[in-house]
Image (cartoon, rainbow, N blue to C red; front, side, top):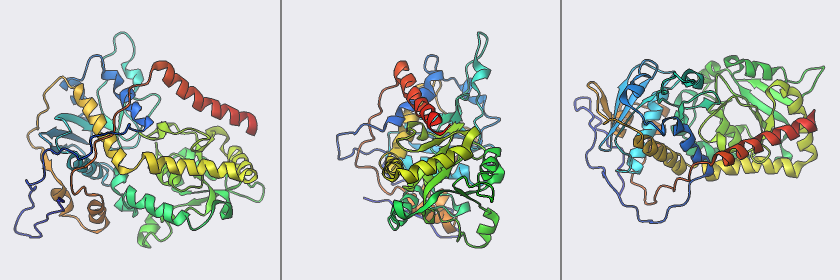
Length: 427
């Protein structure tokens, strides 16, 4: 049975949340597959609170920087807003959480958390180290780095990014794959391609120095994306599915991590991934030379030139890297796994709470109708496309165990070894 969007379509009758959606559901399937390997990072993200748990006092310490508080109570979502983030990141994230509740009714436990929607991580490890240091506050966010403790959560763009004309992840990935089939890898332009806004970071501005000039050709073809002009002209020059005509595509971070990583990797062109400082929840599970070609941040022009020359002389091997990266997303980042990651993260987080979640005075109950019915355009279309209309008939995947410390160290060393090898080859 499906439960589609149920709007009143009336200016006089207020939109209410339907009460007929199932509160529990037993799937037909009784066997759960094991989750992708990157799910093991859930244990690492929550490790700082494993021994002592999370008190209300810890959580409340982030109220001054969080954009909203989420409370799940008896399967319903309540939001207390604190400040407006850039564009509608908070609303996209909340919409995704509502779909999780619809996909797995009764499986998300009561919980309370704070969510931060800006670019860079804010909970720094060095503030909570030493004999007199207190426990870090838990804060959910989209990205982290080696010096932060932010708890990573899928970003809003999986449910679409209407401000820049991007559809839901399911629709966008399919469009990219279909368009990529039209041109074989060997027939694509034999250079490295990037298009974006270089003004948001020094790393992107530095990348632009790798563009071809009369004196140097670093085998890169780099273009500035003017989003204001694109918006005025109907986004004709920024369609992601039209950007798979080069053999190589470059990923470079913006202010922090960038949601563009998945769109670039989805195209089966070989991804040249400029050494990232930040990571999102899934990128940690990908390996250099298996899923992408690593590029050093301080040697990017020469590394790009070497990668393109090597790939053009080893077409079969270079093409295989691009195909494995794209296949990783198709197999491990389908929306079922995005929801499963959210579910396992929230379940494990809820186990750590040392207080009873409560709906604060002034918080608003959110549901699909309350969010989607009042809006229009691509914002509404993305919500309708991504709306879960019935509970899942398959179980969530089974969460793999935490990394053994030596196992995790070996995994990270494997990544570093690939980069060292390329340094020896490329100079």
